[in-house]
Structures are given as C-alpha cells and as structure tokens.
Image (cartoon, rainbow, N blue to C red; front, side):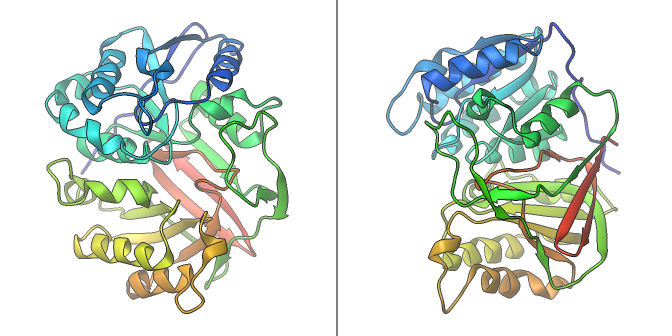
Length: 337
C-alpha cells in the first residue's frame, strides 16, 4: 500500500521560494505578487533565473534544475512556486534525476501548472510527495484576489486534512493573459457535463496539462505505473489540454492508454480546453476523449475548473479525492491521507 508524503502546511513567518522552472514571468506582476505574498505574513526569496530571459526559457535546463534544488536544500523554504509556464521544462528533468535524494529527503510543497505540470507529476509519482496543481506566481498579483486562489491559500494555511471546493459560478472565455493586471473576466455560465448524473467516484488523484506531462512517458523519469500500482483504491485522472488539437489530444490519450496508465481508473476530469474554439467538426475534443477512454466505463466529467481557462480548482496530486457531479455542478473533496 502506497503512502503519500504531505509537506508541512504554511504558517506566518515561513519562506516562499519562487523559481523559473520554464519561462520567466512579467516583472511587474512578480513585484506585485511578492508584495501580496508578504502581506500574508510570509517571507519571499527568488532564484536568479526569475529575472532572466533566454527567449523561450528563463535559463538552461541545468541552471533551472540547480536553482530548484537550491530551494529544496534551503531549510528555511517551505513552499516553492513556479514563476510561469512555458514550453521546455522537460530539459531540466535529466539533471534532477542525478540528484534525486535532494528532493526525496527535503519534501516541501511545489506549486505550478501548464508546463510545470510535468514537474508536479515527476515529483509526485517518483517520490510519492504531494504537489499542487494551481496558478503560477502571476495570479498572486491579482487584486482583489479571486476565490479560486484564495481557496488555495486557505488550504496552505489550514491544519485540516480535508479540503473541499465546488465548481465556480462563471468562467472566462479565453486564457488569462500574462500581462493582464486587471484579473479575470468571468462572463460565461459554468456548466460541467457528464453522460451520467448524480454520480460520485473516488481514488488517488493525479494529472495535469497533457501537452507537457505526457512527455515523461517511457523515459527514465517515468514512474507512473509503479505509482498507480501502489493504490488499491484506484486513480482519478484530471487532464488539462492547452494547445493540442483534438487529433493530437486523442493520440496522447491513446499513447497513455497503451502505457497502462489508466488501469484501475475510477473516473476522468477533463478541463476546459483552450483549443475548444478550434474544434474539428469531424472529430471533436469529446470524440477524442470518448474514443480513447469510453472502454473503461467510468464517469467522464467535461468542462471542469482545471487548467488554462480560469478559474481553476486547486488539485493536490497524490491526495485521496472524491468527486461529486450533479446537474451540471461538481464538488471536489480531497483528503491528505
């Protein structure tokens, strides 16, 4: 039976580390975000690459790995957050492989989404350490803070082992813009979809942005099958699609299926796709999901508050989760057990 390691929750006076594991962020937003985090009673340090920019990435894969590892070795740092998403986080993973004990022996919260989903999945499946799929540093610059991010902050400061979130009333049509300081523009009614109604399912929850986390498959960094085999209670997979077409989305799901990642699955949570407006009329995103996953005969819930179209829920990779769906609404209950 597998055991998940949950790092210590935050308390006033703790230190947050910011590092650019993929791309760097908007400097103005970093400054505002740091002020807002400090106003929570926390200290903040940032690695050198947060203010660097080598085009598509902040710095080399080796430098990004080393700066992340320095935060893990720093006993003052209790929580690490990604500066931004991006494209090539995978370049740093081979360097982390050479220093596995640093992460294994210094468990602490790592938070990020989009490209950092790959790092989340790597840490949780390789070391059984829980990670947080939620906004990168930019959204901490939003004033006033939207409930989704406040839910994450409340979780990090709470001593409770149970954490519940309900689907948010509205969502934004498009991806949140990196340079936007005004916050979300929530105009669309938020309705989840599922072919079943009044259902609930539970298991260990794992997933992220499929564009990036699927890259780990079949590499020396891949420990997914070993991870899921540890938990008899089964797995809930949550999937965010950023830029994949419906055709490529299906290819990635098919490949994951062939790798055995969906054995003992209890249900799927599919986030709102950034590419929905470019749906292929002959093969939609729902077609891709059904073609790949319907054989498992488990609930599949679409348009969940996950990923690039805000707001999104905080997901604790590795936690024991229950999802309840009823009449277009959902509730995610996670337990740190």
